[in-house]
Image (cartoon, rainbow, N blue to C red):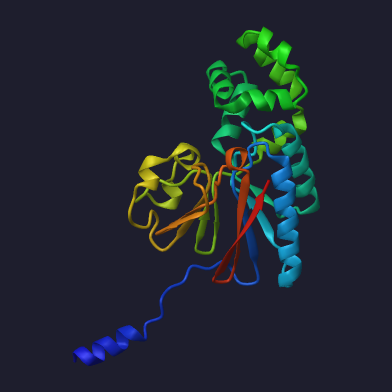
Length: 256
């Protein structure tokens, strides 16, 4: 009896996480205003597509395009053009974009938070002189920011998604609340969660793998049920992505 049970167990196929058939995905980690790294990484992705043949990849950006780095406005311009060329490209709303949108909507507390989370670099990237920036109070800064950010950029950021599910993969900016079903996940957790998600020792969502950014590691980190792609490009000089096709996944990185 034991032998028959073992034999039956040994033949049970291990469930592998995969993306839908005929699809190839590329997930890109937090950019934070690093246009040079972004351009280099997308060039690597295009070369990877050509080398592999088959379907063109669908790009998924994990959020935090802006702040900290010097070229946030230019990154947004560039990605608007990328989406025009590749309409299947999708974007997740990061916590930095969330705060910027609230600040543009007149939320003073959000503007104060934005200022302290690397927003200075974003404001300067829109052509505002540092002397003018440093001379205004928060009311003046709000007016300055609203005048500087074009409607096309606001509309672009406002179109970003909270969560993307493809096959056995869940793409989010920050993570998920462990033990909570996907349909019950809250936007704040998807964009801000850290300790509760990172500290869990089991799969946050059974049977799924969470692909996220938000928390910086020196390199891509793979843990049970999750993969972190934020390698802190503005600080480390390395922007990371991961490709997915069938049951296969692979790493692409650009260094400054």
